[in-house]
Length: 207
Image (tube, rainbow, N blue to C red):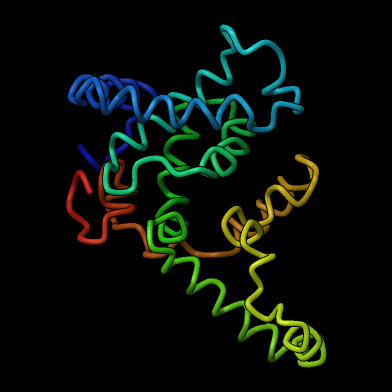
């Protein structure tokens, strides 16, 4: 099923099936793109620290991101996704559960990673309107200096401030953010889709 979740066994089957059906060139390209980020994501944290070779947590992060990318080829993997997935894996310490949570989270965050930047443009628009209303004096200060495009907030919005704090502090910020906001769009009654649906503009499997 694309929606129902029975745990680690289903995730393992999904991971194997997606890797098997992918063309070798596609699999190699996705794996290389993911690996480039995985080996430098939160490496100062004990959970991800240590030698790369044979590191179980780096391997788990690599696997869940590769599986997500193969299951959502229209979006695939984009730089920064490893920063979103790493806290989930570090807290849950379970690749299958982290994958499920990542799929759910990407229902809201995927537009920010899409080529063309419309999702991020919308987030910037929201931030500009909020700042003009909440602190017009500071907004005027930024506008007078040509900084009202707020491009310095790019990483803040893409990664939800994850890189702006020490890892343990970032976990607290993300917990508040992720537990306070509903997913967008709301998940269907049968559960979180594991293929295509969470990030497909058409909502069709494989998107």
